[in-house]
Length: 148
Image (cartoon, rainbow, N blue to C red; front, side, top):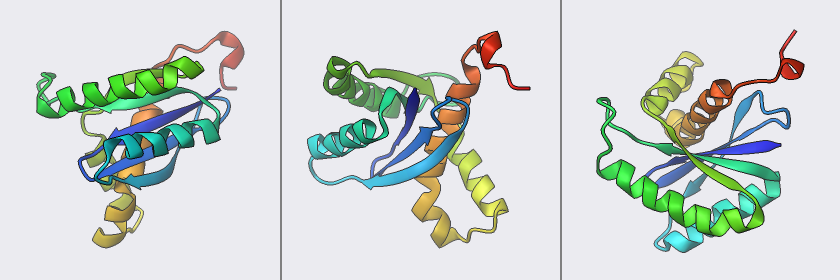
């Protein structure tokens, strides 16, 4: 079943999706935040339904020390709001450590030749893909799912 990765930002929400086998994450889109957080959540819920995802992985922005600061507390509140909307439909919502995902995404985009302006347009969804890929890679695999 597919998973959706979410990188919550103050102005933009980066979204990535996995393939149906749960092995590969790809950037999907960026949701530009409006003035109504409920509308932003509704857009995300619609995207999760469109993708047929069974899990949503939301980045938890811990500090480098591992401590949870203001941003992590805000993310936890958003995670709880998403759980209330998605879990009644059988979609699991998980928090996952997202330290350095944006830095990793920025570096990868720069190495791929994207200039500053084009990076800004896609960095949030690229960071969501880095986050989701890390989550996918951290999950135990059955022997039947092992790659050749």
